[in-house]
Every structure is written in C-alpha cells, then in structure tokens.
Image 1 (tube, rainbow, N blue to C red):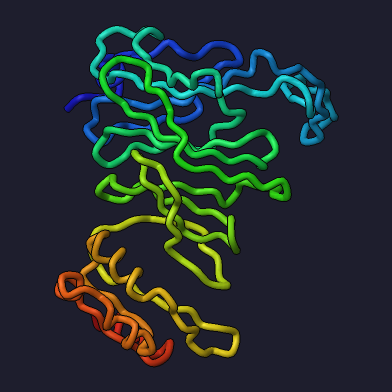
Image 2 (image 1 turned 135 degrees about the horizontal axis):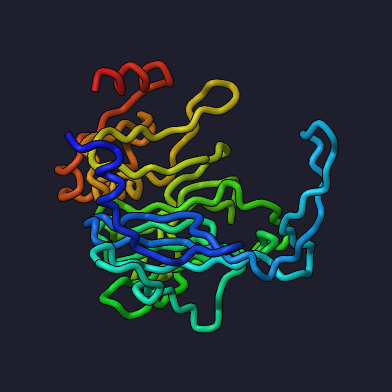
Length: 288
C-alpha cells in the first residue's frame, strides 16, 4: 500500500505562478479533467500599511498590503492550464486576453458542462458595473472573453448575491440579478448573447441557483396572508421546464386555463399536476 510519502514523491508540480505577494487564489478543473482554470491574484502594487493587531498579548503594528480608495488595487487574472503538461512553466498557462478591457474584480468563474467555455462574473471596484463574460477555450491560444450581459446600477452597494451557473446542457448561462425587483434568476445565450430572459418573478428573492437534470419543479408564490399568488406566465414556465429536462411540473390550479395555449408537443413531454394550497402542494411534491 502506498504511503503518504510515496504519494508526495510521485506528485508533479504543474505551475510556477506563485511568488511573494502573487498567489493562486482559486482553481477549477475542466469537466474532462484535462485542463485547470486558475485565478492568480497579484498584490505587488498594493501599498504596505501598518495595521494594529489587538489579538496579541501586546498590541503590535503588522505590515499588510491594503489599498485605500483611489490607490492601485489587487489585480486578478484567469488562465487555463494544460493538466497533462510534464514540466511546470508559466508559459504553459493560456491567460485570458481581455483586449484592454481587464475588469477590476473577478468574482467567480465556471466551466460549462461540455468543457468548451468559461463564464466569468466581474465587477468594478464599487459594485456599480457588473459584467458577465464567456470565453471559448479551444487549443493553446489565449481565450478571449466576450461580454454576454451587464448590469449597471449607480445605487448598488454589494455583489454578495451575484451568482452565475450553467444549464446542464451548456445551452444557457443563468445569473442572479436585481435589475427589476429583488434578486431573481435570469438566463442568457452564452454564445449569441442577446436580451436576457427572466425565469423567476415574485416578492421573494432567490439566494442560490443549482441547475439539476429532470425531477419535479414546483411553481408558486405564497403571500403574507397564506394565499397562493397568481402565476401569469404558466406557458413560458412549462416550456422552460421541458427544455431543462423536467419530468413533472406542479402548478397552482388557477394556471389550468392558461395552459390551453401550451403546444401539443410540449404537453406530451411533461406531467403537469395542480395544487389548491400550500399544504396540497407539499403533499403532492412528497408523493411525487
């Protein structure tokens, strides 16, 4: 049986990308396991400042890199590494080529399930200008990010709830945005871009998105009085559910008349059931 020492000796260094004040802060394996997307953070131009450390027995001034507004900030970049490379070298990393439009902050990045694309969620330093890009990863050439959608809001103050996620077939890129109300799920074509399509609506908010294959989708909204709010886009919801592979759809009974407009083809691909109240919805979803 190999020991920890044996495993360590068999390890191979794949990159030489870290040095003082430059580090790899995140990485993502490609779905086929042949590539790694890495995020490098460079603080070499950030000013050094003395910050009091009150947790020691005696307060001490600790030198850390800390940028004040208007000063040079931390810089991030994303590269794609060929994981099959034998020797470690920075030259083996294809860094994304932003063509002079490098974002201030990289918030997250994700491979598409088919491994062809990287989606990157970015922001300016003040969370006022959000831009979501998609880069095609093909061969050894530096991927070039394409802008697919953006949110500009001078009143916005945080990017805490910003999320992106791929559909399981890589055909859509989902993102959370409060561009119209509170945070809801939107979808955009990762290749063609175009106008984003809103997928959820209501006085509630969405905090996370985790696409799944098949399964049951429950649609509805309960107001403060405990009544079911009307759903005004039942046909669209049913069509999206079928596109995403849902096998069952549970909707308020008031949606029944709207679904007359659902095409015969769509109606044969999903089992649509109805509920009268929250308790009925819960029981039917458990039974299903």
